[in-house]
Image (cartoon, rainbow, N blue to C red; front, top):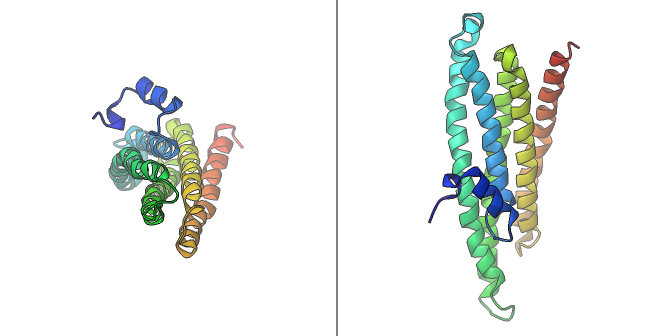
Length: 208
């Protein structure tokens, strides 16, 4: 079967728009996060090797290396999200009077939460990379660093919703609360950081 990231963009979006079970919000969040990280990486590539930025060359090279890895990780999570949702979709179809349903559903919900939480974590790192790209990267591409932060923030928020829609159905409320707390903490820390990058870049472009 063709992998999600191997589909042409038009086909991916067409399937996303349909009633097909996958891709869904989690996969879309991973893709948007990957795009955000790629934008940051572009800023780095436009900065690397320029005499004007020789003082931060080592930092830019480090950022570029990690951005490349992070983008590939998020691309992998597009597929992982689809794979994690399949068992959950199957579990929903089990008759409610089936004694095995509860355990199967709980395992499926656990797996379905794990991927968007990982997407959230990686997009938070994408925000941190965007911060550095905005501060150290070429001023000619600073708008892209701002876009990178915003894309990663949107992807974080979307992934957070995909965690929440699954934790609310978990029978293990203690575990659900722990997952919600972890997601909430990441959003509380990194959303304002992404906003700060946007404010900085917007002000810079407007000469404020």
